[in-house]
Length: 442
Image 1 (cartoon, helix red, strand yellow):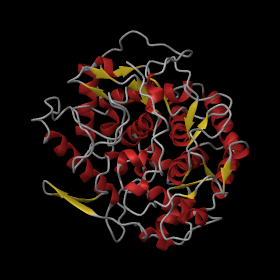
Image 2 (cartoon, rainbow, N blue to C red):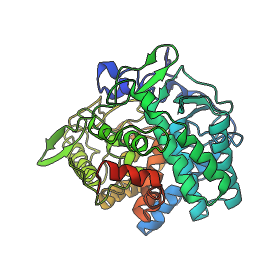
Image 3 (cartoon, one colour):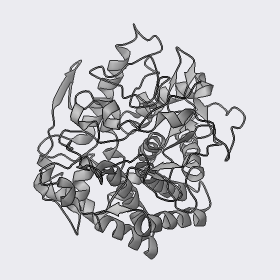
């Protein structure tokens, strides 16, 4: 396939279409890089066996494969994780995203606990990653550039200092601090978190800016409507050094949508992942503020999304009760933001495994049915690092890549479904507990 040539990296918010003025905020995974010829690293093995009988064994198989991505597709010298890689291995690209590194740090905790690799080597990789983040990676007021070179830390694509991606990184950093009983790891992690100047990113407003660049200053678009943003506000409110007031929790709107009798808070024209990312670390189960129970809200959002996909069966015959799920992902035409309800993007019958992978903790039975079906009936959708980012059964197209944040949300939510380990570990952070108390999540 001829590579898609881009004159600049697209902004993820352009793809999501939240608003025209949000277009600069969230640079996307550069699909042009997905189709280049790469070399070095692992290789695809023989076709894997069918899924194990038990759900737990099946999820373990998924997590082991994803761990290989986070181990092999990170720089041993810096610990920074690639934004994307070929699903079969053999990838030589060097662009990392700090969000992928945040997911990767948490994945290392899971791998250490489950003995997926050598314990000493995993612990050493964590320490190396944190040391690089604190002492070598460029930051401004504690915020990091969205995309960097994994080996040098140099800014890539003229990307922004990203408030959301820095927050994802910090979630991984703080998970490591609580899991590893190691003075060096704990000290490094605390310093990385405590240096963040959260009020600076407010830029004089009530809601956080989506980011900042040295060329243009603050991005005018703000995190002012419900989405994956909850982590930003809770990390900032709980900060022991540079906090924002608890009233910031009220700074973003929470619009509701009713679909086929299901009513929930959402961001109109937003993909399913907005209901997943903060929940990978923050345990909102049995917690309610004056607005809603956010965990139950994501359960409802997942149910509505399934119904939405099934409503498209007359257009796309592959969408079935055991084959559904669309969220921002690669497609045969490039990286696309798509989903619903309401319908968003050029939906073409593609299936995105991380849509159901990221909702495992919200609708385990439904999501497992989809993932098992993919694993059994679509063997080309499973490669060295687990499920490819997306595929289209109707067109016979299978993505050559996996994307760090997409395999990341799948691994973390699989673990939360299995043992609640990520929730139980991350929630022991006293700063997180203080933030929950401050916003009256109880």
